Length: 335
Image 1 (tube, rainbow, N blue to C red):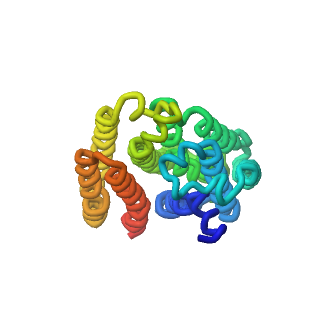
Image 2 (cartoon, rainbow, N blue to C red):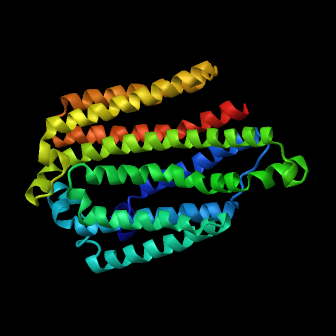
Image 3 (cartoon, rainbow, N blue to C red):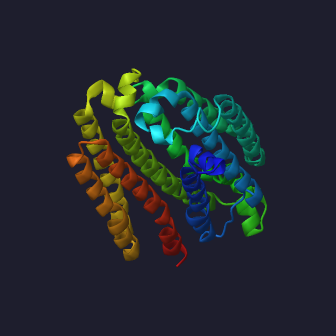
C-alpha cells in the first residue's frame, strides 16, 4: 500500500466524508426546503459554508492524527497490522501535521462567524480542537467520559451546519421580514414575527433531532469499539468502561442507548405517518430500524473481537442510512 493510501487511512477519510456529507445534507436537505416553503433563503454565502465544512473536516482529521499519535502502543496490540504512526509516518510528522490542520481548519471557519457578526462562534472550533486533544491524552481512558466527548462532538456536526444560518435569521428577523414584505422594519406586525420565529424554531427542532441521532449512534459505536480494544486497553491501564466494569455491563449500557434511540426514532416515524409520508416510514423501517434490531442481536451473541467489529461496522451503516434519510425529508417538504 502506498504512503498516500496509508495517509488517507490515517485520517479516516471515510469518516471525514461522512462528516462532510452530514453537514451538506443538513443544510440543503433540511434547512433549505423548510426556509423555501416559507419564502426565505439561506443567508450564509455558499462559499463561506463550504469553507466551514472544509475547516471542520480538517479539525476532525487533526483529531484522528493526535489520537493515533498517543495510541501507538495500544494500537500495536489491538490492530498491529493497521498501525501507521511510527511505522509508515514518523511521530514528529504526525504531530506537526496535527497542529497545521488544526490551525488551518480554525482559520477557514472564521468567515462564517464573521458573517453572523458574532465572533464567539469561533469558540466552537476552539472547543472541538481542545476536546480532541484532551480526549486523546486523558478522556479516552476515563470510563464513559471519552465516549460522551466523542458523541458530543458528533452531535456538534449537524448543529454547526445550521447554527450560523439560524442565528442570522433569528437576530435579523425584523429586517428580513420587512424586506420580504417590502415595508419598513418598524411596520412588521407582531403576528408575522410570531409565525416567522415559530418556523425558525421548527427548523431548529429538526436539526436537534438529527443531532440526537448522531449522539446516540456514535455513543453506541464508541462503546462497541471499546469492547473490541479491551485487551490493549487493559495492558496499558486504560480504564474504558469495558475494562472498568466488564463486557456484560457495557452491553447493558448499549441496550439502554439503543432503547432511547428506538423510542426517539419511532416517535419521528409516527410524525411522518401522520403527515402521510409513507415512503419516509418504509425507508426508516428497512434501512434503520431492522438493521438496528439486527445490531442488538449481534451484540447479544457477540463473544469475540470479530463479532464486535461486525456490530461496529453495522452501526456505521445505520449512521450512513441516517444521512441518506435526509433526501426523503427534502422531497416530503418540497414535493
